[in-house]
Amino acid sequence: MQNALEDIAEKAQRRDADAKIEITLRMLLTENFERAAAYNNILILACYAAFFGIWQLTRPLFDRDLAMTGALLMVISAAFFVFHEVWKMLFNMWSVRTMHEIILGKQHRTYDEISAALDDYGRGLAASGGLLVKAWVVFFTISALTGVGALTVMVYLFISSFFIPASPPIPA
Image (cartoon, rainbow, N blue to C red; front, side, top):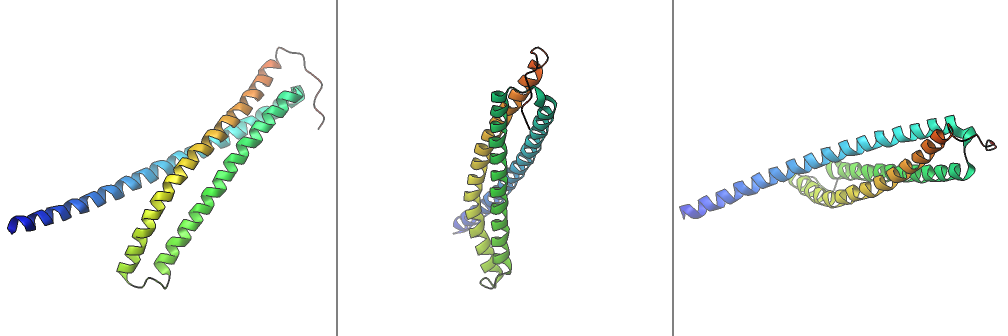
């Protein structure tokens, strides 16, 4: 009997330790994702700034087809970047609103009800958080590749302007 009680207590302690480890790992993953997303945003904004700076310097020298290719790539890049940021903002607003309703709403009155609802919400958020990370990878890849492609076109035009006589400027 004593061994059975010790086994039950040990299993309960293990479950508690596993739950604490899971919470800690989720917090670390969330923190790392937020850092990566913030770094990503800074990097993309710097690339956009560099693109438009080079665009201003080389605009009179542009070959029309290359200029349109660079502009199209940059528009695609910016569209994916903005779409993802808006989607992420809406997701975060929904998340905060749901937590607000759970904590301050009238349907959960006791601590246990609120705790159970928050646990359910956390499980659902973990599942949708995986979707957010996967979407971020897709949007980042498309936005970065098209942005780098546009920047490459502009750098090529800038460098080639030193070696090729200028063509007539594109009308504004």
